[in-house]
Every structure is written in structure tokens, then in C-alpha cells.
Length: 201
Image 1: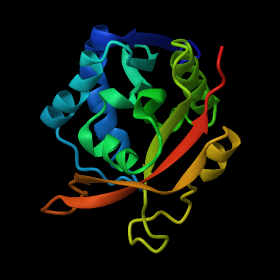
Image 2: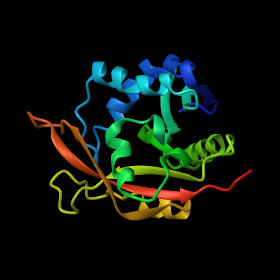
Image 3: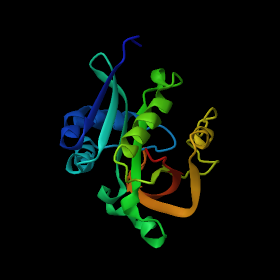
Image 4: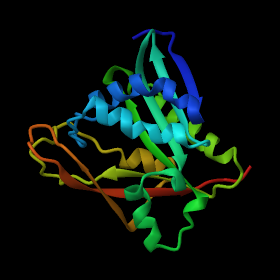
């Protein structure tokens, strides 16, 4: 690990400049538990296009030399895919007031040095900068405690998220479909939403 990490932020259409590196990073990090994602580079590039079509999206990335070693994304919830928005339509939340936080991913050697907090700081600051968003949210996959691929030393991020002020919203769950490693067919996964009220500036 270099002592000279570089941070690159892209917003709106310019986010596409980071898609190639981010697609590769997502495929590497999300193979681990709890996502167990068998990624496809072509799918990744297509999925990430949503960040280039939103004028208020952001990708904040960390590079060690020429390699992206971490990244986090955020986008207005109203600009997200239908499956992300759908569970909110059954609630009293106004999706136009919510900012959605996407992935927050780091290669293992770069964990535990404060970048996770930095990712939340940058996303919250970006969402607050518009002065119109009242809440931030994200979702995390639900896996059973006795899942056969759960590592013995696995620690969920719940305590970290609670420390950041996020709380699970009871009943606010979405379903996403992807291919798990070692499987031949995609399957649906339940994703629990966490939310926090943003301070107005």
C-alpha cells in the first residue's frame, strides 16, 4: 500500500470516466460474502450508466497509483432503477427528498484506515450541498447467519452504520436478482434499507 493515495471525484456525466475501473472493482469486492456476486463486466458497465444520466450523481474514488482500490457512489433516489425505488412507493416517504447511497467498496488491504468514514462524509456532504434532500438511505443484502459461505471471522457492518446515525427501516425491503458464485442461475436477494435524516445547511 502506498502512503500517497489519490482521491478522484466525478459528478454527473463525467462519472463515466470512472466506469471501467469501478466495474472491475465491484466485480472483485462483491465476490466476497455477503454478496457472493458472480459479476459480468458488460453488465457492470451497463448498470453504471445510471450515474452518467443523473446530473446530481457522484462517484468518489480512491487510487493507489494507477489502480482504483476503493470507491463509493450516490445518486438522487428518484434517478435510481425501478427496483430500488419500488419499496418506497408503498410508504409515506417522498422519494424526491431522498438521496440513495450505492456501493461503498474497498480492497482488503485498504480497510480499517478510515476510508469507510470518509466515504460516508463525502456522500453526505454531496447530498446536503443541494439543500433539498432531507434523508439519505442505502440497502444491504440479507443473508442467514448459518449461510454455508459465511466466513468464521465475518463481521457485519451494522455497528458501523449505527454509529454513523443510520437505522434499519422496518418493512422497507427490496429485491434484487444476481448470480451467486458457484450457481448456474440468478436468484432474488432481499435487501434491507437503512436511513438517516440529513442536516440542512
